[in-house]
Image 1 (cartoon, rainbow, N blue to C red):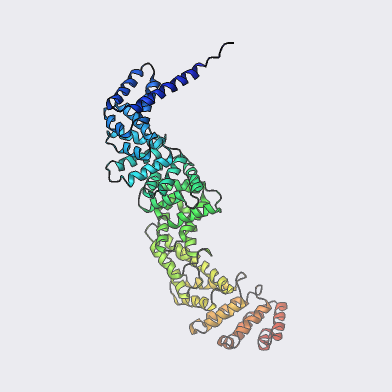
Image 2: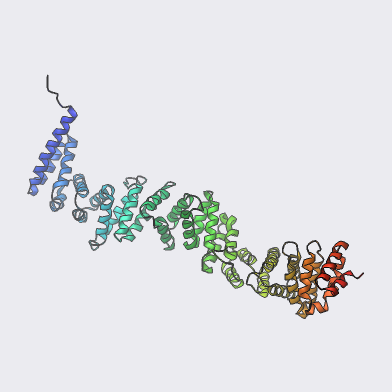
Length: 545
């Protein structure tokens, strides 16, 4: 039986390994500069017949020759051979040796090639360590800053840039993490700035964020970078694009992650990039997220910032559909997040938001005022400050409904409602009587009527000689609505009014003009109930024909 011969490929590999081993020993044993040059010449001679063998020789020189000898001798290398040898050396040497190679005085093109090779192919932790070393221990070296910039560009710019190398998303994230760990936050920030300095495909930022969330779950790395970018007056377009991608793809809007992103953007971004972000999100059909951002922006603690956002949203026609959400949240609030603004705050916000292009914003702001805690005259002042008649009328109706509802609920004192009506009667601008009538209609209508509130307001109005007719009118308007007023309500009202100046001077007349006109069955029921409650005199006023 004959002995099996090795296959050609195996034989070639074994022979190549044997020759490489011999070359390694020879190269390591070489002590003279001339021998290194001899190896270069040998590689060149072999190149025509065996290019791979020639490249292996250059590779071995880069791996095994002492760094100081490489640096001294490389000036005599052919430019391409030098790039090959030094690039290999940068990939295989220690961090300190690599730093020495990078900092040597090479022609600029060669230095850039070696730095790019290192940044593109070395382990991420090594790349970060070199950058840390160059920006700390070797920061005084004039070429250090340029090398760092070249590396950051190479890491960031993938195949989207002509002749670029770049690193994959995972590598970018790892290098950033290591840079931050090495306290080189400025370089880490610049890395992300370079990464997003040109348009990335949809989802790129989201994928990078997922890598960060895995390794740095306690931080919103891209969100922090974007915030710092837009608040430092740097070009904001990359940050806006990044946050648009993140918010668009962050999952359900009620998720913790989505809420954090939206709260951070809405609460901290300057007005102009915030508006640009909302325009981009609307283009992605993310209307619900834009509304959420508006609400977050409206909750800012400083009215000047809220006013700036309002002005910017009025400058963008694309955002007209969400302006109402922004204003309502700013003025009305949404407990428990924020409370409604006071009248003074509403006026302040309206003044700060008012510009020639946002004039109607100020009117809308004033029309959204909440009545809780507000003085009647202040509300009238606010209403008067709305120049547009239709908008003022709408605001008056809204205030009337709020006052009636809040008085019934006990969050607004009847005295404040009476003061509002009195203040309206004292003004002369068009629409004051209608605004006062609106309040009376709401107080006595089916939605918000309360006998206690009506009685309190009437008593308060009657205490002002100028408002006695209005006090009687409030009672009449309420008691004529027999479909709303129950006999128990009548008892409650009389119990409060009797014994007051209003009760002594006007109650009997009011009862005769109102309850006496009720349908007979209702009137008899009212008489019986009043007698039972001890109000016989008032019952007589109703029952007399």
